[in-house]
Length: 160
Image (tube, rainbow, N blue to C red; front, top):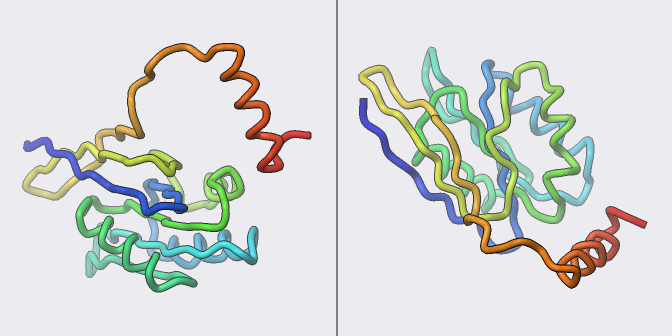
């Protein structure tokens, strides 16, 4: 077995949801979830099929984001994983619906941070062992940091 990491630099203004699933219709179901929740979201989806033709299945309402999701899926190359790269929305808007999708097994990350995907590769293929999402903590928040967090949440509409 060989261990490796794949780095994903999320484009400015975009977010990524990376997860594991188990069925070919995942792409269509995730597409329906995205447009059903937000009419403004722009996104690209890529799903790595793990049997049969073993294709990367794709869908989007934005070709540039579809290309990014496809490129990430090719770099990761792990069966039954999916990526959604999107903008004009936040992961919090979609996570519960994606988790409720019958095909979805797990969500590895939902982030705008740079991501490193830790992979194991065997003679059969690749699997995701874990995720490095962003950077390590640099300290503990101060009162000023707490106030800034509260203000941000109110500014973006998540708190009154």
